[in-house]
Length: 328
Image 1 (cartoon, one colour):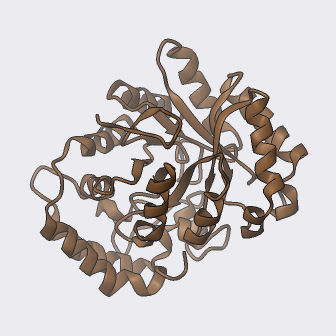
Image 2 (image 1 turned 180 degrees about the vertical axis):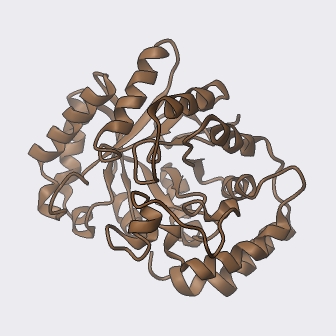
């Protein structure tokens, strides 16, 4: 496993980390015992950074991570969670001192810790980024010892660019993968200049970049790839990166030719993300130990050659760009 510095925190975190949305729910049925095995396998293989949120399984994901933290007290495991999506309705006015403090206190209890490493505002309405008092609340929570650092999880590049104007924002989590190239333009340049950590979420485009899906693939009722296919529950960009299913399948077929022998398409997709030095880590999910091990193996792959990078860009420009580039 290779490690990269997370912004200005000084933390060295695994470039392939563990996304814990899946073990909380919204990706079909999940078994807690198997989820714990997946977490243990990832940590055994060098992962030291876990990303979760208070709404993943309504705290289920955080509580499982808390169990792991108690098991491995002697290890330095960095945990990032998120706050804000418990709001109903999810409006800018809800991002106030009382609510954010309550959400942080709840996550502290779920994780069983006195101080959290990183708390991210969880894809708030755009207006929140224009309310400095919200970021003042986060500063106060750091000063109170409730968290060590804070950042943002965003839907749009423009939201990230606004967020990093606040001097104490340490990280930006954003969708970045073979189907989402726009962050690599201005955002990554600005992030390097300001020493902002970049957490690449949805790195496999909701599993599409595993190459395992077909036109007839079906998903459980509790899987967001079913209930949010068209953005019915939350931003459609979170599901298959916002790319229409048939277009995604066509793009995957072209990308399949790039996969070397002995490497999976998922590993190739993760290695593509790691080619960008502005990225601190990719955070693929894993619900089983095998999935966790397969993800981690991407860190050991050789850098992709120029021709591979060119082909990925060409597929993006021809098939994907019209659907996503100016939306997020």
